[in-house]
Length: 175
Ligand SMILES: [Zn+2]
Image 1: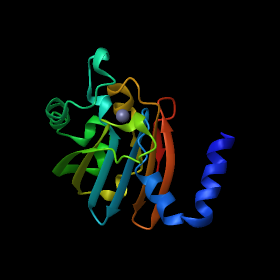
Image 2: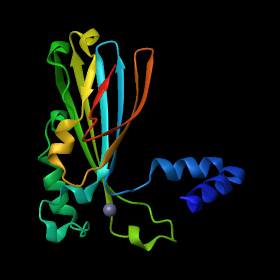
Image 3: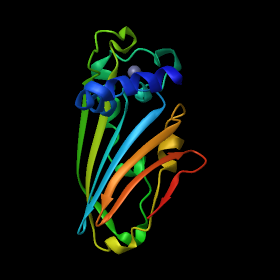
Image 4: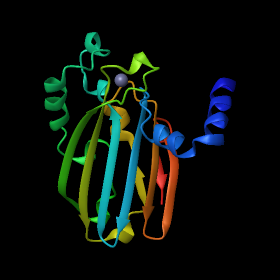
């Protein structure tokens, strides 16, 4: 922990922009990230996770380089409901979904990252009653992925900004 703090402070001194970029792209197994934006009735959700989570077979947990297989598994996820339960009263219908798989950028110093990939799912939903979006439940993500430990959630819902971390035991965010 002390080493992490010292490194961060050092980076902040001279390379703020670079430090932030690295943080945004950090590839940590067990940690997922969700970004949620609600504007009028349009809900946009971006969900990012290490592609290793897509491997059902325990033996292959640490082999992330089978790109075609991962893309197939990723595209099987056709609804954002796989990760997040949205109140039915909000009457949200998914109108679009985009899947992305990309290699984790090599830092040149961290060889453990070679061959690892990040998966991103971006969903767009139209909500008839956005005022009924009073909570977001991430339990489905924890049910689906055994090795998921926490999800960092950031977002802007109308005039309200959101920044919380959820776990399996505390998977619901009240809005
Ligand atoms: Zn990885």
